[in-house]
Structures are given as C-alpha cells and as structure tokens.
Length: 315
Image 1 (cartoon, helix red, strand yellow):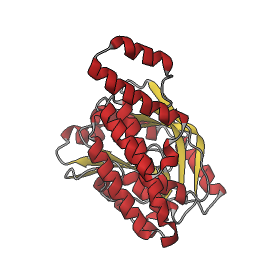
Image 2 (spheres, helix red, strand yellow):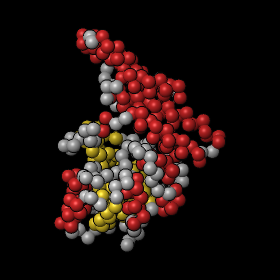
Image 3 (spheres, rainbow, N blue to C red):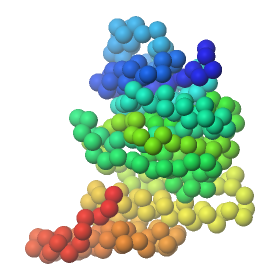
Image 4 (spheres, helix red, strand yellow):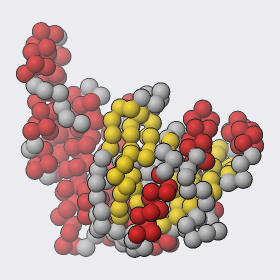
C-alpha cells in the first residue's frame, strides 16, 4: 500500500437504493489508491448480490448482525489497511475531488489529525437545501467541546494513528461522531477544505426524532467528554449545555414544536445566557411564544400579522 492509501468505511443496512450512488461517488474519485469496506447486515441479501455484480477489486464486503452505526464503523476501522480512514453513510455522496483535496492538506501539515470539507445538505431527490460553510483550523478542541464544528459524518478524513491514540466510536446515538472528533481534537490540529465536497442527504423523517432522546444522548456525550477536561476548564461545561439546549430549541422551532422550543430555550438561558441573547435567537423565542398563543386562539389573522412584523428566523 502507498503512503497515502485511504480506507473508506460504509455501513449499509437496507439502503441499497442509495448505496450504489454512494459507492459510485467513491469509485469516481480522482485519488485512486483506496479500498472500500462495506459493512452490511447479514440479512441484506440484496446488498450482497449488488456488490457481487459490481466486482470492483477495491470493495470488501463485511457481513455482520445489525448492531448500529458505531459498531459498523468500528468493525471497518479494525479491518482497514489505509494510512487514512474516511467514513461515508450509505445515503450520502462525495464530489470526485474530495480525497485528493483533503490529502493535499495532510501533505502540507503532517501534524494534522483530521481534515474536513464543507457540504451540501440535500433532500432525497438531490435538491440542495442549504450549504455548510464552517471554517476552522489548528487547535479546535475547546470549540469542539461546545458544539460539533463538523456538520456531517461523511466529510472528515482521519489519520489512522488518531484511533490508536483516542480509541474508536462510542455508542451514543446521534452524537457518536461529535464525541470521537472532539477526542481527536484534544490531541491533533484540524483543517478544512473550504469547498462543499459532500452531499449529505436529509431523510424525510429526520425531523420526527424525539427531541428528549436527542438531548439525553447529547448530555451523555457532554458528561463523558468532560471527564478528561482539566479542572480549571470545567466551567466551560455550561457553554456545552447552553449550545446543546439552544440547538435543540432551534430544531423544535423548525419542526413547529413551539412548546418544546420555548422549554429548551429557557434551559439554554439557564445554562449560558449569553448564547441566547442574540437578535436571531430572540426572534425564534418571540415567534415561538406568538405561534403557541395564536395557535390556541386559532387566529389566522394575527398569525399573518406576526409573520409581517417578524422576519423569518436565520438558519
């Protein structure tokens, strides 16, 4: 294997409809020294047959019981041979230059542990909904403790030695990525290719998840991460909780769960008030209060007035 070989790990469970597009986006990479490890459910006969039909020498198919995304990724890491490891959810896609441009940053700075990219958020028909353009570089550990700077689990490319240093994915549903990236950030600098090279697909039921379960899992991740934080920095846990509650409040608002949005906003204010006192966030709070009250009054007229008086909330 060459010094810049890459292992791409793809968990695939009942996703053959999108899997073919995901794998094709890897096979189309301009950087060609890679292997693809597909970790599939033992019962996914259609995936097994599909892989056999492709007959691409870069692909290795691993069948195991469906034990979740983290276990699948960890199995792939264990079997991988590349100096770098990338992860790709089976319903996401890469632009053809993704690996090439990430490896160029690694070559420029051998101390880097992780290189990210920007991404497009798309729907099931590949219509672009939004674009992530977060920029960061160097020591980002304290920022990562507050919230995940990496918008998509399919975008990072990780130097393999990072896993020897910090371990693999923990089973914290919805936050296993953030947990691992933050642990890596504690020891290695990050960088990002400032170009959207990933298409992250938003499933139609993605906003129907339990917000209480989401905040419970994020709380678990926060408590676990802060076990290794020096005592003089433990005060920053309030920031982490403030971000967690505020993010959940915004998600509740966008899915029209206004009572929950108000509740989570209040918890965010209790944890770290400064994060809440921005114009954009106060708009969300006021509109949630108005919509909740106007909904109980069933007054479409006043609701239209509220729309006129207040701009749409920022993303």
